[in-house]
Image (cartoon, rainbow, N blue to C red; front, side, top):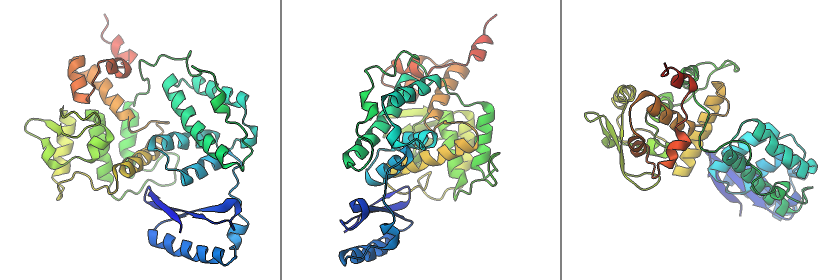
Length: 352
């Protein structure tokens, strides 16, 4: 019986049989019915001692970092946070040969991230995600990776580079405008055609709510009409990450956008995404990753919009740290040091 699971709208099947090279095959299908039919036929052939030619020639060999990441994600239920990081690492270091990975490579791998001005915590997240991938392929026992070089790094390997008390990446006005244009089907500068979303207005509304309110992704896509009080200019959140209920004030921009958007809805839910929260979060995050890349925003992420909203609260309002903490759902004012990264030019404008 094949093992199957769904991720990002596609169905992944793992067929285990001694007749297969490396004892298993990884398959991807657009529909569950298609996968069930194919794997049933495949298992019948394998049980009869017959190996289809496409599998006889396929070794599932792990030669590069890209191979390792691809097969790791196919075989293991990798957390969404790790998947996002591994996608970045695959693009950046995917062609490197597994046989060339040693301590010197690991040391240079960390050094390159430091030189890219990544914070120590971000470096640790990247190293941790790839280290867990390498642990898995090492346990397989059929690769040239004898030891995991990332596990040989010394303690505090990510320190000594940058303070963790603030985040630096901001979304410029031009990037914001370009992102909205891309969402609505505009042609990216580096592509032949624009994205074709089934519901572009939903993605645009996700973007506007995030950058205007600082709400978390899961707090946004689960919103219902009953949570919005247009007279009081607030959004009521009863289910949040830390379990506390809170009210989020609406800016004039968000109030106007939501008024127009809600008027077009027949259902109670503001968004029509289907699946588990984990699946929806992953799908939206990955889509926005593509959108930001097309808008030439680099490795900006959807969560970065929460940081951008926070900075705008500090720059454009006279709200206190306590008031901003209540809006964003912070339990500690220490978060203010982490997020309140004001543009130097804005501060300079306030000097005599």
